[in-house]
Length: 440
Image 1: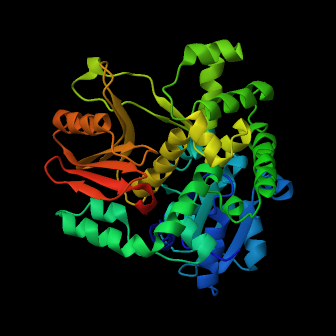
Image 2 (image 1 turned 135 degrees about the horizontal axis):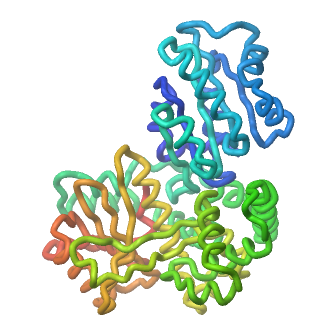
Image 3 (image 1 turned 60 degrees about the vertical axis):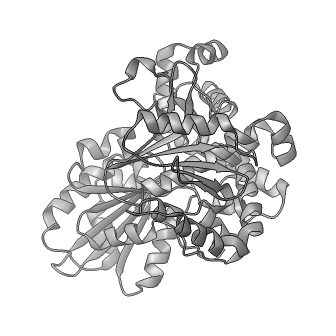
């Protein structure tokens, strides 16, 4: 499989040049190691030590305090000022003993440019309180998501697109002609983008799934992916004592993706205590498999529904778990809207992770039932997104966007993502975006 450039690649590679430790977090198999491999291809003269904490042998050596010895043996010299050694460690969270040793080496050589640590993980480092307690103030974290629509286009067809809708969203001044130019550029790719968009509703954004050619191959891969996750990531967490219950929670998360969480019903279905549910769901989030989207809250707190919406963030796993991996069946069951919502959430997260600062994605719903699917806070601006699989504009959803804009004065633009055609309502400042044209 040829390398496919990632949306946030430049930002992450720029961090490699800096002296601080670089942490790259993302679910299993989204391309973290491939990103490192590509960097090494572009810089073949670097002195590099590669380790993987999935390796029991390497992990056992680290657990006996041998990180520095491993590095020196590998490079066959001592660490020297201005002669940087690049130490790249995959699945770092698997070895808690690693972090204290990284801290000592970093502190000893941080002003000498003698060593650069790059660590990757398929679980949040805070899962073991590692970065908070050991590497605080020494590490910058970056996130790598599953493939976006634009990355999928490159991966599957070798087509690179320079346009980025989110860059245009953030432009200081916008007018209808700018949006028309954007969609005109994409028009020749409309059909191939639509086909890839539909594939992502079924199979998500894992690169090795997207490049498979048959349904059977994709289901086999996803089944093995889930089993590997349970056996390697989850079984290693000592406080998870009931793997069957954990798997049942994953099944429920898949079935209810995009819905407001109803913990009472979930507790009844699982037959467990609330403390256990919260703990297991916390690990599901920490291992980057699941995400809660919380309500958008401001002064009108009492009018807002407080329960979060939950998302199992991989559409491919949802297909595997639910057994629904046919577009026509998804349409009949009414689940296609939630899949499209899940896909858009990944695109939004890629956008938010493309720049520094505290950004967030929420949803908005009042006690009277007025709802907006996503509210993106990218300071200093607010963006509202409605997403639907329908090809026609629904007046109720338009009214909801207008009501939100009236409610939140910082709203820069409202976006209506659907399966129809481009349009722009200048009076209400609403952009109607074909989903196939949402490229990051």
